[in-house]
Amino acid sequence: MNLENHNNSLEYWLEDQAKSAPDLFPLSFEKNSDNYYNRRYEDLAFRVGKYLHPYLDRAALASEGIFLTDHGPEHVKRVIKMASGLARSERITLSPYEVYLLLCSIQCHDLGLIYGKGDHGDNASIIMSQLRHDLSDDSTEWRVIFEIARVHSASHGAEKDTIVQLPKTRNLNGHTVQMRRLAALLKLSDELSDWKGRESGYLMNIKEVLKDSEIYHEYSNALHNVQVDHDQHRIVLGFEVRNPEKQSTRGDNQIYLLDEILERTLKVYLEATYCSRFLRPDLDIAQVSVEIEVCNENGFGVLDTINYKLEERGYPTKPAAGILSICEELNQWHNNEPLSGSALASKLSEMVEGDK
Image 1 (spheres, rainbow, N blue to C red):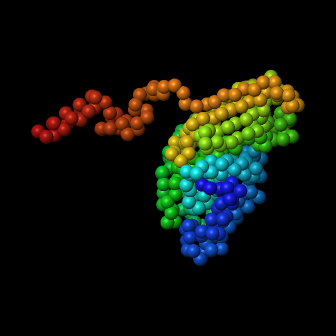
Image 2: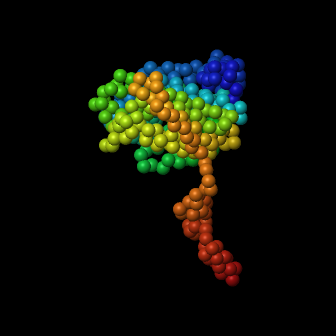
Image 3: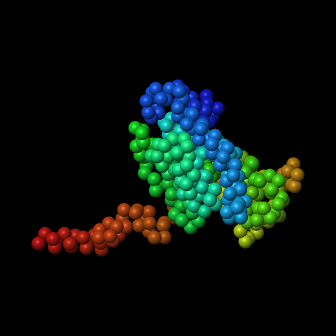
């Protein structure tokens, strides 16, 4: 998508399309001629930005006693910024209506945190049902927005392959919507929106407030650069680590910030690899490039610089369970049994017996 003339923002692009090409949206030209879909999005963004987003972290703290990294208005802005960066690939093609649905999903993706962090993707439906009655009673459209938003997270211990739960496409209001593509853009954008600014500011120094989540705030405070390099098919991350000897709390454990960075950058690579599956061939992130500057306490002296790349290397590892673990259709090939030489022989024997 070419966003250069729209401040490199999907929001500005949507506003322009709603004004200049209303016939590309559902409903009649006459209803869209007054910028209908952009106004609908702006109404949603205003309501959740004023009445819901500022209170999500506070609600999660009251529910679970954990002070989360920022999930408020600034986080939503960052997710939109990252989604715009991902969509800037010249090969990415989204319709104006799909951009509208994606932006609405971004606005709604964390609303379930009102009820706590657990299952917050699913719990968003409770809040969204009220928004639907206040803003627009197009229940099918709201359900699509919810379905795109909910797969950005998985409950602890739950199946992480969430995007595949959606159909590849679905028809909505006379338009074909690329469900998995939109969900992948949201999920990856959310993963890349942990950069500097999501830390709790003054609260970083209050141990009793941070409790089990101190290391997450330290990570967000250290991450100062996130870029999508379309030419090199990579994501670039930059960190500044001060007090490298310090350990911070994560649950019942104490952990060095560097160890958290190593673990989290691996997660970024896994998320990028997973989401790329649904974005190819238009967008394929093949590498995560990381630079960590270890600085003195005031940040003006660089003591050491660490660079590494996460990318596919060597020969692929054979799945422990063999081919059946990556070919679902072979698991119930005949009589609910997996395909094998003996299963084929058994089926042929049955066919011979049936012909007698």
